[in-house]
Image (cartoon, rainbow, N blue to C red; front, side, top):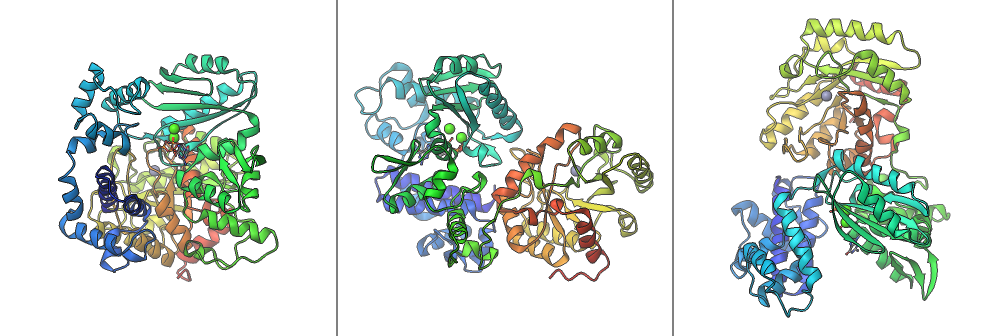
Length: 605
Ligand code: DGT
Ligand code: CA
Ligand code: CA
Ligand code: ZN
């Protein structure tokens, strides 16, 4: 875990402790805000502290900045340790059970004298928790189930499992008579890299609840029905993923979709915006007095709140509300004054048509493997598949010689492979195939092939594959050195992290981005669900600095092309427009961009 995540966790623990000790709710809230600010922080908290910039971060005040500095110095925060001394450690651990929040833990501790998970388990089994308000049979049953679940798994689930499953549920539910619309919402719709659970919304007039419930139960993935009511069904899949289904009337579709898409933070701001205008927003609609102002579509709701529609991936209260309000003003012919520093990179004038990149903007995929290294398909099969996807160009980029276990190519094999790619490509019309390589960035930032070899290639992806636990500065220098080579077109999966598998390098990404801006090098968003590297906050740094992103699937087989959607989700979370994504450009523009750098007359700084 990074320092940012470590300290965020520490503040979150501090907030929990304060709440359990009945501290002032405003202080608790302020402490939670610090945790969130650190989670969202794109740069290294250590660097910001060293340069005395902590207090400039929204949500972090003087005393929090001091606490952060203290943590960086000593590895703990004394004030929180003192609080921790007053709360049994088992009470904090109970908060890890989903459905046990601070309030519940507080009651269990103070009213029932339960101070750890084993005694909670015992009390639930023996049925000895009685006479406490809010602890009926139902609540206890829920806690018991969640406790059992927690003991089998605790991790958030990756998109590689969650997305196909959600898509399949949506497809299946759409076939039920009486169902007028189905969509997944929650974190999946917001394009987050992992999900806690799935939220699926179903619009249906006269609720055929029984038909829906039967159809869900029949799905082969369903292991257990956790709860089933008229309008809400919750199941658990064999893989341990929870899915919440909610049935709403079509008249409330837009409001429900908006509500259940979240994020909570975005929704809080929206409800406030409604209140400021004398209206009330909830999952049923936007109301003035008892009258419905908007409810059927999301568009209408945002419109009535004097905002442009916000793409789901941006709904995190990271400035998108201010952006959408400014777009609304611009469209109405007014010139909004933008004060929000988060929008500064867009410029003084918000274009009325500002839009995040979409799948249909993508013209090609510039990172993929064949059987020459560790791919499963031939050159011809990859080209044919790319053609069916409507791509105008692709790059074939097999591994370099250092990747022995992945069948990396010696220089001789690479040369033969290049000839073969050109020969096979000549048999296809209507698509340009770039001969490329995914060359290893070695631990010191040098590359696995000499420049003479790279010069003969049309496209060079340079990626780190080994020495991924390097310390921060070494990792930063390594990536900067690779980017400085004018023959490198794009840095592939820059940190090497694997979601739920490997933490990867933690370079100072702001410095890497600035170096890439100077050298005119693109940075990859590797779209594989296990990677999503760059991640959202780092890709946002590239967008702000004007460094082109390249959204690649790194396909090792034909079906991997489908993973593009995950990379698009991350790019949209980073506020990337089509313009920011290199592989939305026509090939001629990419070539001109590459030529400026390779010929040394680049003027990228
Ligand atoms: P996850 O499941 O942890 O990946 O994240 P989400 O965002 O999918 O969260 P989830 O499943 O708890 O709730 C889905 C959405 O429903 C959430 O983004 C906003 C909305 N929502 C659910 N419960 C609440 C609530 O208590 N307050 C507010 N404001 N919104 C809620
Ligand atoms: Ca969810
Ligand atoms: Ca949920
Ligand atoms: Zn690759």
